[in-house]
Length: 194
Image (tube, rainbow, N blue to C red; front, side):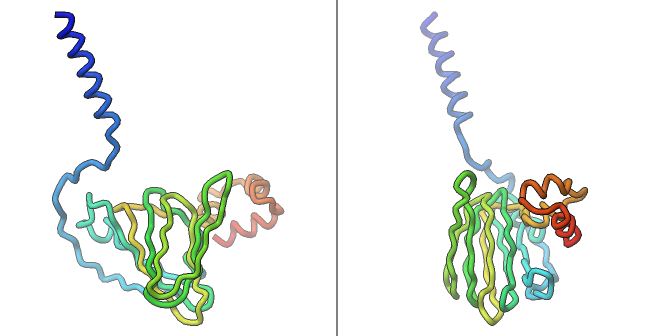
């Protein structure tokens, strides 16, 4: 009888261990969801950073619910239009340039903070690993367009300058001055820009 009990205990622990060790996305709760039409248009880059990011995620197309993917179209103004340094906390991004020339890159995490960059031309592809700060910058004299696929239906986006200098309420300027090795007045000025 002790052998059977011992077997059942070991078997139960083994099953529990296998269950806890399973690390994957859960199965979708449904096969698909019918999407709604959107009237938003891409392309307007007349803003402070010279770009327009048009997302296609679960917020715009509910049909992406449970599928674990999303897409963005990014339009860049000539001569410096940029998608400023940002991160996606829940997704890896793969970017393909369909028009123009972009300088792109990402920075690895601490302690190395190593910068990887590349100049991309039409048809080129670049991957930004999940959670790392990355950017795109139009070095061409004409408009540029890129499409990016993200490995999450809701990748999230944190634009670094907006988060640091434009938080609500504002981060104490002494904290930022020390962190960025800037004069407190410069930090206060930067906070007014966001």
